[in-house]
Amino acid sequence: MPERIEIDMEKRIMERMPGVVFCSRTDPATGKGEWLYLGKNAAALYDIDDAELRADPARILDAVIAEDRARLDAQIAESMSAGKPFVGGGRIRCKNGEIRWLETHATIEIDAGGAILWYGQTLDVTERKRLEQSLADAEATRARSESLYRQVIDVLPVGVMVTNQALEQQIFNPAMQRWTKPVTDHHGDITGTYGVFMADGVTPLRMENSGTRRALRGETLEEEVVIKNELLPEPVRMHVSFSPLLDAAGKVVASVGTAMDITLQRKLEMDLRTRNEELAASEAAKATLIDRLRYSIDELSNPILEVWDDVLVMPIIGVVDSRRAADMVQRLLAEVTRTQADFVILDLTGVDVVDTKTADHLMKLMRKIEVIGARCVLTGIRAAVAETLVDIGVDLGRIITLRTLKHGLREALRHKKGQREADYELFDDGEPESGARANGRRDRA
Image (cartoon, rainbow, N blue to C red; front, side):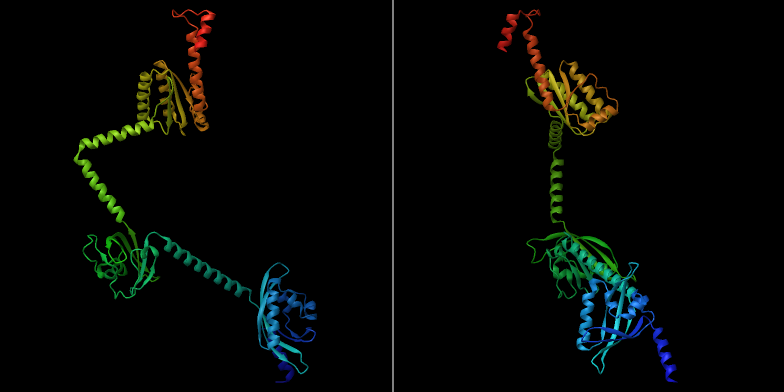
């Protein structure tokens, strides 16, 4: 083949290779370079004007973003110093803002004049870098997930044990280690090594009947066992559950076991059972206890306080239903009669919600108090309660409402003061007193 044809053929091959093939010369003294050959696609690859690129090879380095430039310069300097092949690259920012990853593979020769000759190829590896980054991100996410899962398992108060088909304990969290410890020399008898007994606490649990073995055979189960070994000052009763762990093909590869200490729970249940039996043996004692509890609850639910002479306060907390309203009426009317109180304050500070029935109970209670001769006021109505009362159309025209219990007590004292002054203004027969006698009564008061 004639030499010219062979050269043309080689040039056509280089022009059709991926990326850009190049050959350049660098003067080590000045650091300046020149192209001996540069593929026709170079300007498009570097997104630089073709004439500008061919005039100065250093224009390529100027296109590299700052974060990658220092590393690339160090790679070039190392290759030039050692004369070894160069593999490196970096990112360039295209005119449209796109980030493009370029990677160069080159060999170095020193010519007779000491100049450095570069023979190489630059490739666009953006997609490969994106794939590598995606794989790295996925691996990092997986590693974080595995770490998080393991942290969660380690802090669980429930014991977790994962055992493979070879009876190797792949997970044995700290909670499980409080009751026993992972061992490798169990010789296939985990239950015997750990001191696992059946629920009666006497019969040893045989390994072939254990939850681990049954889960490895594909069973899912829950049972109660007792553990007794040298790590425990006293036996521990546990509720355990086991499930098979399957691979993608549905084959059992491990068993997952969880354990929860129910020693205290069983003790409390036994104490409660004993207590119930004792209460059942004495109906009278049970009835008395129930009556005391009901009385205590009623006292706490509807307390009545005598805060001043002939002044009673009933703070109401929570929901007022029909049963509670009946109890409030009965107790409050009895207390008004017993103490001969003439002023009653119903404090609603502790009431968050009022419905139509509750409002009706309160109105009836106040009217019954007034019927037996005592004055009654409402205090502590919250904004939400006031809004509800107005919305449901409760008639408060004859009802005195005050902002707080403090205002209610002030009104009670004002009421009593007015009564005393009225008494001093009357004769024994009901006629008004003379001014001097009335003043004398005021002075004595």
